[in-house]
Length: 110
Image 1 (cartoon, one colour):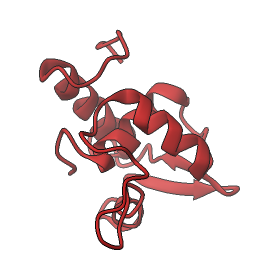
Image 2: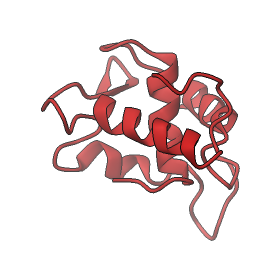
Image 3: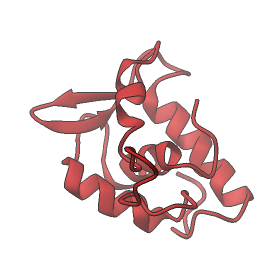
Image 4: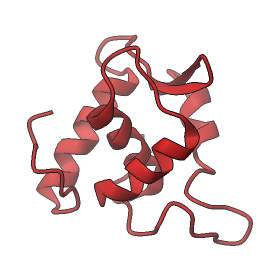
């Protein structure tokens, strides 16, 4: 599970705030939306060595359970298994980001 603040948490929160179950975003859309959340201390496109904020997406897609899946070339939050799916983890990270003062979306109830 990603920590707050981090790029991976920002990616999950961005998907939660900007999609409904089954909907997705392109990489380009998601990078912009993740930056806008404020949930990462570093900009998504900042390179640290060979890596940028997108580098952790592969881990989010192959975890057990996976938190993100691909549908028609779009990145989506997983909805199963209930309680530990991507939407559930993203919701918990979003609430934590609000408690810790990182998320500026104005809606801590999502």
